[in-house]
Image (cartoon, rainbow, N blue to C red; front, side, top):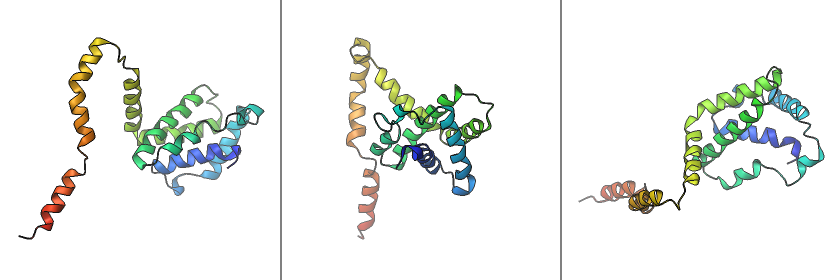
Length: 164
């Protein structure tokens, strides 16, 4: 995959995971708009290829659909933030922004989940008060890790097998 197609690829993946169908999205028009956006940012500059892709690579570690929805919601937010600092009067920027806002509105819980992760990362685990709270919650956390959510299903399956 060339650098020229990364943006379309990422946007296409986002559209698929958010439930957009090919009929509700004109990929040709979107590709044209993205090409114009690339020109706005002078993305043919030689430093663009340095270090490889910055977003597409992150998707490789997120394998399950629900996981991907979380990371893709964050990616959509990042693109929207990037577009906030551009000339929104340009039709191609307006069109890309509208599509991204539609996607963001289709999965608002993904953004909240990312915020939860970021909030956890900000916890000061060397703070005594935080340590006390964390110690109080440790058993509950371990219970959630040990008790798989499928244990109920296994029990009900074993009850059905018994034909006493």
